Length: 315
Image (cartoon, rainbow, N blue to C red; front, side, top):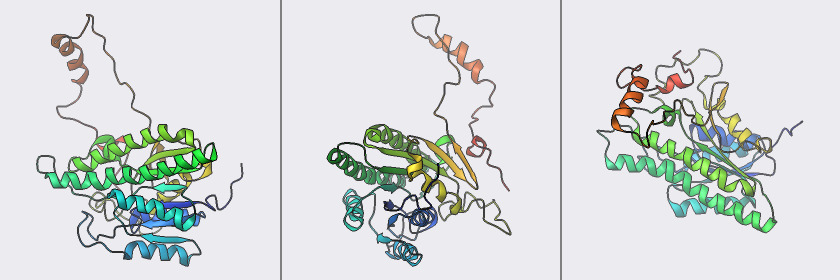
């Protein structure tokens, strides 16, 4: 079935955390596909959310889109603030007359082992990632629900959330980040079920990309001498464009890992083994008899490394 070269023409999108890295690449891709874009970024210089906020990152990306012939405007509010997230959703409808696409990407890092992490470090990451995703989703969902009621049927709505493989297999020094990203998957699947009848889809991506957020994670992964870096954010952006498009109308409630020319659809958790009690309920001794041998094949304390889940290898 042929598709327009501008599948998002006439659509309006919001991309959070779009002043740098992944968000910037995603905003540029949506604009390239024809969407008008609200470029949101709080503009703090530190990847831990430190420093004074600045309008410069969001405005620079919006200017870049306009220079390429697209339509964009900047928003510098904090998406983790409920009222500012509401204003962000209103801005799209006021300026572009509609809101069709929401890409949640904003985030910070406060890495530390769980036994060393402070309450403030936990709260800050959960606030920006998980609450930030909820805030914007809440106002976009309310907008689409009202539009659907007025139209008497489904409307066009796309949500693309940003999770991480840290939720799949843990990340020892990132308990706050891994928890937030797992929560985003739960938010995504719940939202997908709730909004499907209104014509809205919600999906989550787990991107591998070299950005200021991941400079430590990928420090040992060499950049190629020639050609595009396999971990460049530009590899992730086309999937976001696709999920935001009409072509992805049957993709809903999914989690997709993406990097360097690879997209993997993550299967929902499956039962690995099942044991039935020979009595009305299990006793400690019976559980010891069936579960201990099952896990005895693994070394004590072994878990799955995120790099092993989908075969990430060091270059």
